[in-house]
Length: 257
View 1 (cartoon, rainbow, N blue to C red):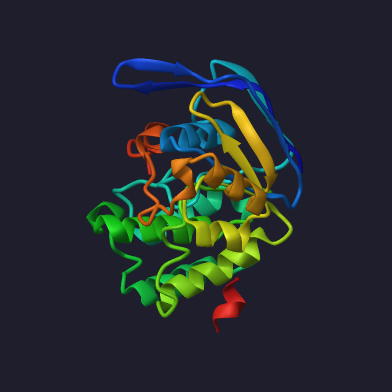
View 2 (cartoon, rainbow, N blue to C red):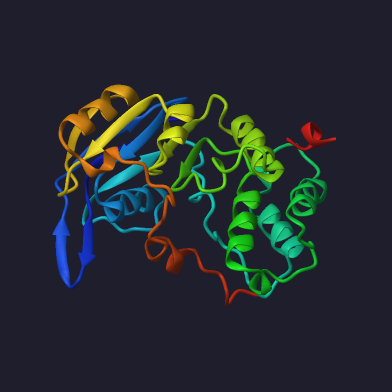
């Protein structure tokens, strides 16, 4: 699997101002796990959105061999009017060839029981936090060649939380020998799962690339705010939501990994 950014130029809208990035060229190889670091969260999210195909670049292109995940933990094509089980079945039918070898309903129930949620509950009736848990659970049912991770919110929580541990166990199984690209600001997550760092400047230009530790040291020495830990690991969901929304459409634990 190879994923290439070729002369990629993006546009960012901030308070009616337009910021154009300088061209970005980068190749992501099989098994490579890269953290994209930048002071501007919007730039990171726009870049991740362009890799998935949600953000149209000003110029340049993204080429790939293999299947790229949607940004893990975001809504995907889920429909709020459907129940959790119906949504899972719907995505299972769309991505049937990417389903991990598992019993889909057993997989879902394992997580929902732990989160004290009913598979018969409608997605739109859940609290915001429970919806986000469901979004992450759904994504973990599939095997992709490239995993896009905008936030580590539900992967690096309380280590005594059984739901978090279940998610981490399955996540680690899914990304084994696969490519990972993350814009998370959680340093613990980056150190656990990334081996490469890509620093992006305020105009979107590539300003440093190397091992993750070298990149973090460089960011710190340059006085970058991205050196700090983002406790909430917040995502600018406006970058992703419009294209992912599908509201109007018709419509033993190790054994499930």
